Image (cartoon, rainbow, N blue to C red; front, side, top):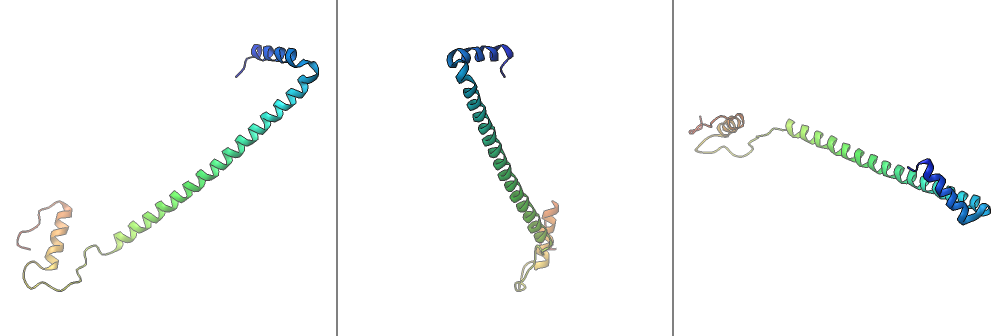
Amino acid sequence: MLQAGEILVILLVALIVLGPTRLPEAARKIGSWAAELRKAAREITQGLEAEVAEVRKAAEEVKQLQAELKQDLDKATRYNWEGPKPVSGPTPEDAMADLEKIERGEEPTEDGE
């Protein structure tokens, strides 16, 4: 910001350079330029705020969709054997029990029990 003394020096120099007849016209032009700059800055700010609001809305929609998908996945049966029963070896139930033990941090059984 300009201090009062600096403003006074600028006005005196402008008065000497432009003279008393052209100084009011120059001041009006500078005032109108400043108003145009403020208007442009306000429009840019409003435009950016609108864009940011759209991006935030889109991000919120994506988060909501992600939460819905996660919820759907959690509801779905995680391990659902739909193939034929094995003739030998562990049964699908034994394999599922082993997977659940692994998820809990336990050791799976060696013989499928």
